Structure formats: C-alpha cells, structure tokens
Length: 205
Image (tube, rainbow, N blue to C red; front, side, top):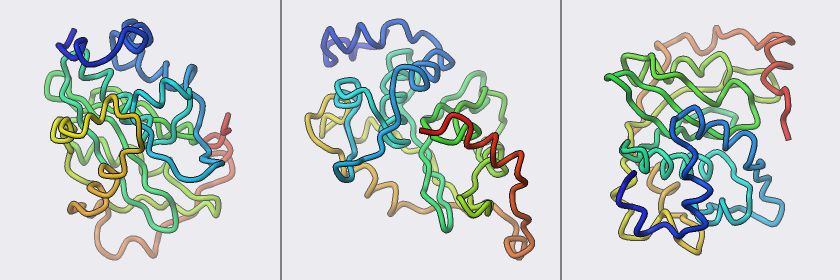
C-alpha cells in the first residue's frame, strides 16, 4: 500500500482498504456512494468529503477513485471528456501491462468502468461514444484531454481537503482537448435508439 497511509486518516483507510483492484473501486462507487445531485448548489468535494457525505458526481467520484488507485500503486490520473449540449464527464484512468482502463461515477450505466484492454487512450475514450448521449438522444462526446496527474495538486491537499476543490475542474477546462470525431461526421450522426437510451438510464438516480 502507498505511503499515503500517513496522510489519510484511519476511518478513510478502513473505507478504502478492501478496494484491492480497480473493479472493487468501481463497485464501491456504484454501491456505497450515492449520486450527488448538488441540491444545495454546486460542489467539488475532495475524496475526504465524498467519504464523509457518501455522495459524488462524476468528478468527485473520479477523485475518490484516483486516491484508491494511488493506494494500489497506480499514478492518480484523470481524463476529461468534453461534450456538446451535455455535461462533461471525468474518468480516473489506469494502465495494466500498457493497456488503459477507467473507473467512473455516472448516472448513465454505459459511462462507468472499462477493463484495461485498450492499447491507446483514444481507444479507451471512443469506447464511451455510443453510450454518451443527452436527454434528446443526441450522441454528444466530442473531445478528450490528456491524462492529468493529480500529484501536481498535492500542494493543495486534494485528497483530504476540507473544502471544495475548484482548482481541479478549472484546470481541466483550460487544458487542450483532442478532437475525437473525423471532420464532417458530426452532422451525420444518428440519434440513440430507444433500447440504448433505456439501458443507459437504467438505475439512474
């Protein structure tokens, strides 16, 4: 386990100690952490606050997953997915034998876990394309960022801060994003069919 055991307190370690694989981290996000609807206003909880409140939206869930991955020896990496007419989505990404996988918190069933079977980051991101749609059934994913190593935010104690971490989403917004789709194809995209739409929204909070 990572030397972060000196930073994270005993209660937090007990919550994270059993998460010994990326799959178990995803299961914890799905079953133990509710979806943060931000009813009292926008939040950007640190992992400590996510564990305390028991809720997270996609960025908050990705931050918690990044801590759990770091405890397993992975670098704490986030990738931002940028959409049109829709919310962005944030993944905690990891590599096993040079293949990319991802962990994510989402109300949409197809925007969560990915096994580490993707040779490139683009392959990983494109796997989300058909599942990334808005309430109008438009496929909305367009761009993605490079992996951001959260160790650069250790100076603000991002893992254990007792405040919202607005520095991180602001940073994700300003860094360059790569186009995902070939030029000219966007106007020819079809809408998601009813079955895919229903499957994507299955279990939404």
